[in-house]
Amino acid sequence: IRDCLCQRKFELERLEHSYRQTVSEQRLQNHTETSVKQHEPGIVKLSTNYNNMCLQMAALIHQGKAPQGSIAPVLIP
Image (spheres, one colour):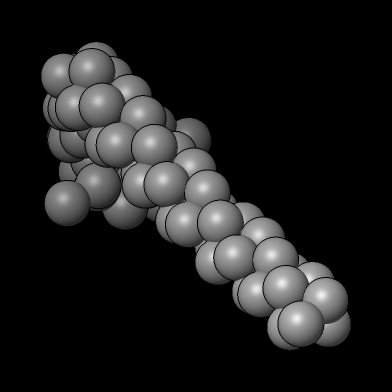
């Protein structure tokens, strides 16, 4: 009986550990999603500014106002 109780205890500990790990992963994922949603407008604005600067550089290269051999950077989709 004693061995059976000890084995049962260890089974429950493993189950509780697995449950706690799953809950921790879920909290981490929720925190990450919230953080991304919060910072998304800033990231979108930054990428828009970058794309506008790339277009300006491409226009300068096309007009011949940039140094020779200049290559415009790739736009962010």
